[in-house]
Amino acid sequence: MKKVFFLSLSLFLLCISGFAQLQASILPGAYQTEEYFPLLKNKRVGIFTNHTAMVNGQHLIDTLLLAGISIQKIFTPEHGLRGTADAGEITKDGIDSKTGIAIVSLYGNKYGPDENDLKDLDILLFDIQDVGARFYTYISSLQYFMEAAAANNKPLIILDRPNPNGRYVDGPVLEKQFSSFVGKNTIPVVYGMTIGEYASMLKGEHWMKDSRSNGFKLIIVPCKNYDHTSLYSIAIAPSPNLTSMNAIYWYPSTCLIEGTILSEGRGTDHAFEYLGHPLIANKGFEFTPISKKGAQSPKLKNQVCYGWDLSQRKAPSNKIDLELLIEIYDAFPIRDSFFVASKGKKTNNYYFNKLAGNAHLMEQIQAGQSAKDIRASWQKGIIKFKKIRKKYLLYKDFE
Image 1 (cartoon, rainbow, N blue to C red):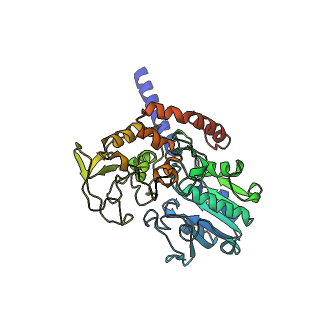
Image 2: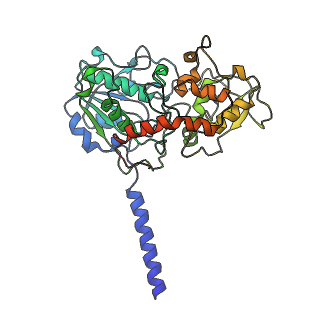
Image 3: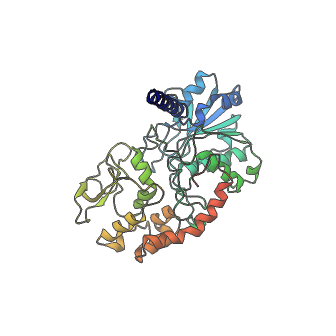
């Protein structure tokens, strides 16, 4: 009888646990329509978004229109509204064919909206899925959008989304002389914050350029059931060359390969998971980058590359894989040409240094320093950043 009782109790608890997990599914800020719909009613709305802003299987734009909310303009980041443009490809203003709403590209002639773009708007909305690496350009777009909102006295609502790489902080902290669109502020490569948390830090730390930024109205609609220990899978590729969760987890490590002579896998189905070059020897894996949608002119196009297949290899869960980066450098036969400079050999001309946020990492790899020693050199900057970061967290931290 006791066995039956305990078996029944165990099954009951198991069902309750499963139900609780079902109830506790992570919901991005866009799902909390009761929080922001009232703020948008009877207002002329400008929305910064792309294809990732989904709500219950429907795009946020359609959700808003069905609710009778007036969207006047759509602002778009790198890769455009549909997320299909190549990395670095200039996108143009236009008209959304589905809704007839004007599209203003903020990855073309300008990175932020101007006074003319905003003069007929009452309120701004921001909803984009980020991946949590400093060089992923959506957080730079966020900053320009916030600065424009502040300069033109427009309230801004950010619909927060989980950070799939939000479970750790790692990498060198950017030095200001290396500030660019692939890294504007003094944060590590992996900064462990959601878009909403990062926006709060931009404002609170006075990193925005406009003197009026302190007073402008910023509203964050948070995620539900999310914290910085959560495993969150993105259902839609956030950009054309991040097409799997494994690639997103590898991205903070393997995007650095973009600053080298090697292919980072663009032009294959496994960008940021396939790494290689025609001159790499003693590797049993090969791939050939080709022209394809989202990567029309990939590095080493139509050339057979030999190297590393990370598509079946799990990325480190709490750090950048320095050991892999050093292994790749050591395997390349012509090391003087491994890191690529745009013009001349000045440190600021190396794209790798812009991605890393300093010149030290390149120099450390060239000097043969160990991953342990390189990582130790990051710690002072990481500790300082973490103290700042703590002030702006909206969710339980991983430590």
